[in-house]
Image (cartoon, rainbow, N blue to C red; front, side, top):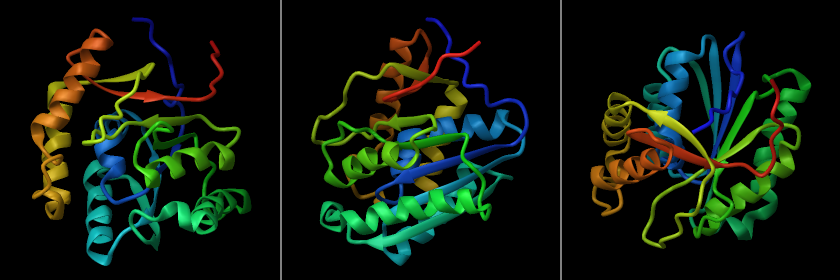
Length: 221
């Protein structure tokens, strides 16, 4: 397996993570967040979440603190209706554009990395965020994470982030700690999260991994 170096090790790094719902980001790339927090000095982040009740957004803010400890993190939401984002295309687009404009005006930092749902996700809310992200951040590296669900839409990724067993166990424990409201759902399950991580790890010659796609990237050395 040939490594692909992101180049996020020199100086401060700013991450923008996009989710249609609270918990999307942490389910899709929570292990990667933990790994970034451990290895990247001066990491800062913005979590941008399109939907969510007051309770769910409180959980999201708690999750951001847990997954990126000792990092400066902000959480922004438009509080749009869950399951209806395609009907709120303009509002969703504006949420992302406002985040990008803040970086252009200097009130926020230009992101070094953007993370978003998969563009082949079967959930209409996830898919809209995924489709809009590269239209807003045209000159940035956008990594698309995957979210397991009953729709059976897991696709073929081509970029992997290896996780240690400790990082995977921490991810699962923090998901349960941050999102108690989701515990009754059958998909919010340790075996689901660990099983997908094991599968992706096998694909990249590791024990565990999270997997991503990207529409466009530049290879430099």
